[in-house]
Amino acid sequence: MEVKVLTSRWKPKKKLGFLFDNLSMYELCRLNDIEIFEIGELSQDKITESIFYAAHLSYCHSRYIKPKYSRDQINEIVGSISKADGDALSVEMLNSQVFGKKVSEWNTEGVKKK
Image 1 (tube, rainbow, N blue to C red):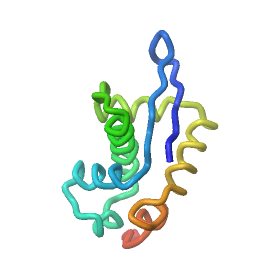
Image 2 (cartoon, rainbow, N blue to C red; image 1 turned 45 degrees about the horizontal axis):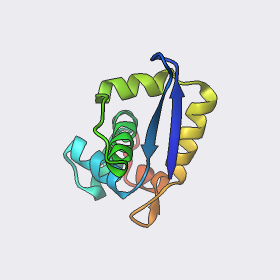
Image 3 (spheres, one colour; image 1 turned 120 degrees about the vertical axis):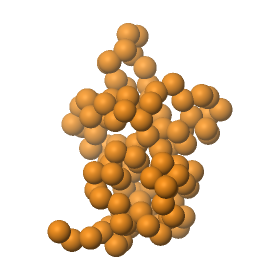
Image 4 (cartoon, helix red, strand yellow; image 1 turned 45 degrees about the vertical axis):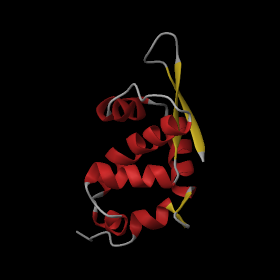
């Protein structure tokens, strides 16, 4: 599933794409040096910090374009978007199917209770 976020940080405004698919999950694992079955062991903060950058990398790969923004820049952009855009982005992420499961299912399996 593809989501575009319009941010006013740059002039002129630019659209950033996010694609939540198998490649984004692979990138999430690669960025955190884990296997796919270990995603549930990551803290919620670590997942949030990594998933949007991984989805942006996947989007760029699918469009044959070189990513222009770093992990920190993507996180800053995602943190500064409107609540409505943020909610829409989160819903799309959680409802995306990757490796036959919804992201929300990968995100909750094995999460350690505090």
